[in-house]
Length: 222
Ligand code: SF4
Ligand code: SF4
Image (cartoon, rainbow, N blue to C red; front, side, top):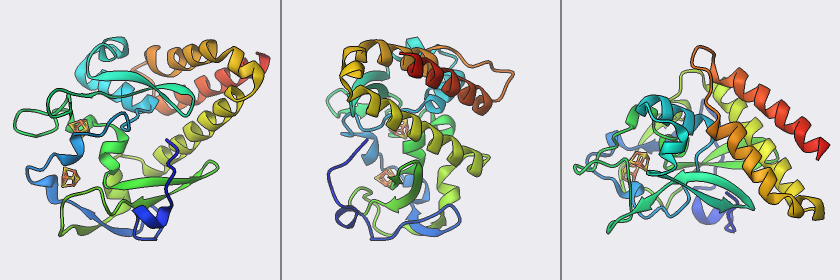
């Protein structure tokens, strides 16, 4: 999601890479669930996020979209995000005790918090969002530990590729032809990356790259 603020306003002024230490350790959050409330539509899910939720909960992606996940328009594209609702405007995955019920397969943006990603083209760095997390005495942790994924370089390569793909689609959607076919394009992206189940006996990343290549071919032929 593009933000209209400068990095200086929201960060400590530094950009981090996976092996850097950053003051983002929240010690298990100790009962705080502030960032699981009032997040609007900002917790956008990438294809791996929805796949992990789907496998972890044993629920088809389409069913998730009828409950805890919703579709919203972000930078001209229709993408899924965690739904925040109820009196407290909270995530549907939050338990009454304020704990995340999907902790082991929670979405990437939840794992990253209070870090964010800063992109230049397809390349990205991490930054510390200094106004977001309520914990005052955060400890220093390695960025890669915050990501909480088994293969960090493979995960980062996937994030870059997905971001690059989204940028390319957004560019197409700004052209007169793209505007005309916006619905068709958005439906194709949703079906290809989110609604069509990934084969469980194959790794996610190769399947994602295959689908990206197929979509790029399809977009070129439009
Ligand atoms: S998925 Fe878990 S960590 Fe993420 S907003 Fe929901 S309850 Fe919080
Ligand atoms: S605001 Fe900080 S301490 Fe509170 S739940 Fe979020 S990451 Fe944890």
